[in-house]
Figure 1 (cartoon, rainbow, N blue to C red):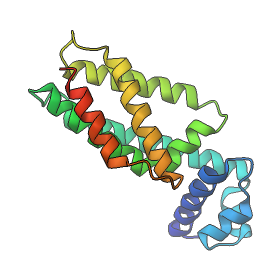
Figure 2 (figure 1 turned 30 degrees about the horizontal axis):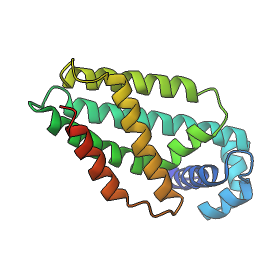
Figure 3 (figure 1 turned 90 degrees about the vertical axis):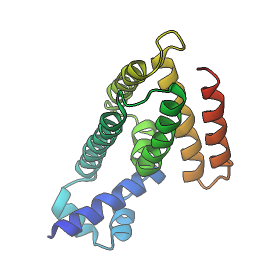
Figure 4 (figure 1 turned 45 degrees about the horizontal axis):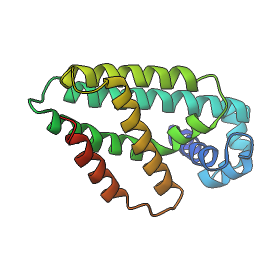
Length: 181
């Protein structure tokens, strides 16, 4: 089997698991979405659980890399907190849009990876925000949780096909948070 076939199956599995949940997703639906047979899926991954675990591992690693890239690119480069907040929120939007299926699966699935991932993400982002904003203004970990939760919620609404006035709400979030500095 080619590497391309594996990628197609993993991408299809992510989509089906995110839309239906681990238990309701079927290997038949995953194989159909990938344009492959169930036999190909089982030959490559063995079981649905193995496929699910690999999807989780790969996507959690991708999300860690994406967050690290944002932080490495932005860290200690802003003179004005307002510019930092706007850029961070806009990059968070891009992060959630690019990872919404994985994030939805990670958050909605009952697995042992959720608590460590969320705790690490909140601490990492909170420390980053704390290094880049005036210390006396706002608790950086709370601000990070607030931004991540709000952006994730809006992105999830769009992912689920609901019109929530996404761009206007993000612009409003940025405007309101700029008032804090």
